[in-house]
Amino acid sequence: MPIYEIPTTSASPSYTQRTAIDGATYTWSFDWNARDSHWYLSLADASGDPMLSGFKMVVDADLLWSIRYDERIPQGLLAAMDMTLQGVDAGRDDLGARVQMRYYTTDEFA
Image (tube, rainbow, N blue to C red; front, side, top):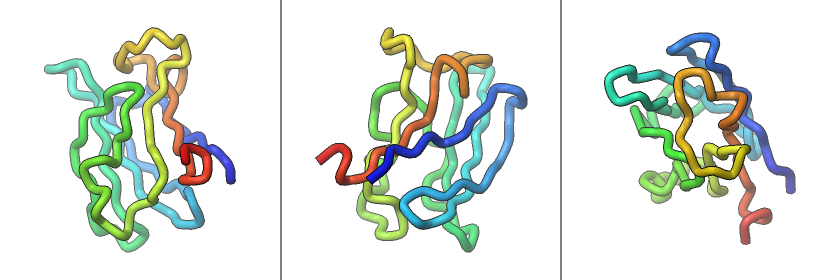
């Protein structure tokens, strides 16, 4: 099974997109919070029902861990990856460049 790269950008401090992973389409919202200097992720299913709201994006951690019980979510591992391997969270201009969103199917991380 593939590793999915979720397209991200730092061009706008707040944006929403629809991206498919594991055979389902989700609505992804990315928001920069200048007060604490972090990106936040919200995720909704295909019908627009929220599954994850305003979750702080920290690198190298499973971003879906808190909603693993929800059968609507993909069952793989979603992570913001610091491509420099330094473990530094994404700054305002780093999303989609130094920090990339990756989804690993259950076959990939099993």
